[in-house]
Image (cartoon, rainbow, N blue to C red; front, side):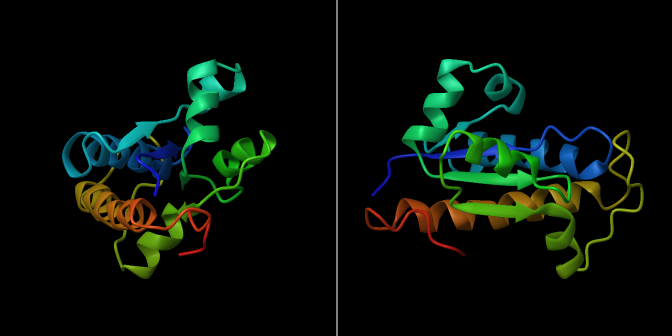
Amino acid sequence: MPEKVCILPSSELTTVFGKIGRQASYIICEDLKPGKIVLGCMPALFSNVQEDVDFITQYPVITLEGHPMHYAAKLVKKYSQAVSAEIDIENLLKEAAIKVLDSSAEKLGPNGEKAVNFLAEYTAKVVEKLLCSRPGLEHSNF
């Protein structure tokens, strides 16, 4: 079983979904799964910062995708690493009927906090499944 999980939030700056993903990742790391999460950073991976490269090569990776092109997952795959779970924030919130009215990156809108907390709780459940998985199964689809 893996001892930790890497969460890589999207660096998307043009929509609210990147902001929601980044805020949710802090809640997961600090409040929901302390000591069980390492936070990856897309700009650090672009720059080949060794610590972030180590995160995605040593631990199962969950990407929180703020853009429909899933750039975080593509970046992980560039390093020939499997992504354990790609969470498309916009689609997840649509399925949960949580409407974030302002799609710009500047405001979360009235449902923004609800969206952040929902994403954090959802992702924490995926983290738990990965932490309880047997070796070799940490890259399964959820």
